[in-house]
Image (cartoon, rainbow, N blue to C red; front, side, top):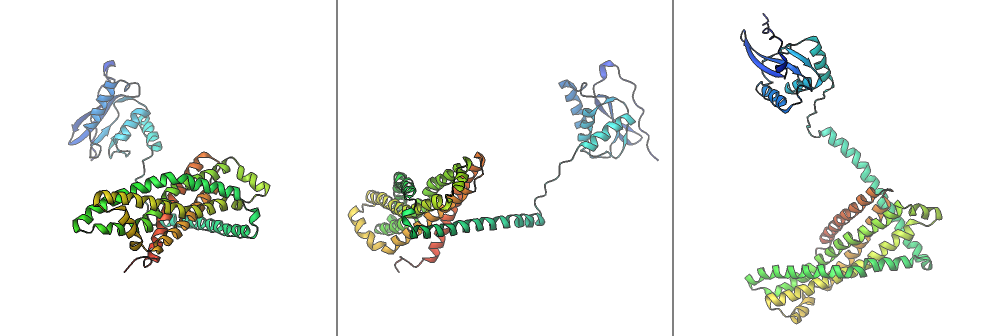
Length: 389
């Protein structure tokens, strides 16, 4: 037999129109009776809003409590939204209300959307993302291979007709990428050599193997750290400059003008930069390694009393000449890859400044990542070259 709700209270006077919620027990059932005016005007004062909020906090939403809204004088969408949110956007199991209040609550319930619960990507979502990104990676590989193929054709064209080559562009890029990079690479290499020598000397002194610092510094700096450090610096310095230069030409429509005039982009823009970095990178790598060895030699003299004359005489015996050729060879590969990646991202820039910044950032990150991967590949392929048994 259904339980009748308690009789509605008498109409409140003018001093008690603020919204409120009261709890009553009637015939063994718990009732929450809302009364007053549940409107934006009635709840505009801070005291009224705080009072009704405290009343609602005392009435849990998830229980078998019955609600009676018939004593409410006025109910607008603000009051209905407050009740709906307190009910956690679900109708209570037992509810008594007038027809005009039900119409307002129905509108609020209809147009209030519950935020979906983020369950994370499913296996199907991951597969769709892989299918979506797979062709994009294939398109990137296709465009990059096309750029390499066009570079090969341009180099062949230059060999057949060297008098038509863009030698002025080549010399300018060689100066920008090579000569202007000498101070910063020498400074960084010098500091790396000093730090590495000081850290190594602390360990070698414990075992009485101070003389082996020449072997450690020679192999590590000439074979690995020198080329990689120079490549990382050039990728951040010159790789970003290549992307920015070509990207600005895209923004200012200079690339379109070159295409209309019949000037090939690969022959005038890509090839001079690739050749300039291919020649400059081995020289910068050797320069950085020399600066690092000089710093390590000074630190070894100060910390281990190893004279510079002994350091220079022991260095050729500790480091075979094949290590230098290996370092210069992979530095040339680093330079070609950095230039190609910079040109690729520069060509892909869209005619807006946001795309220019994004392309420059992607160029630097990709260049440094590729340099490290290629260096690891060289280390695996030539692990038996230049190392004494």
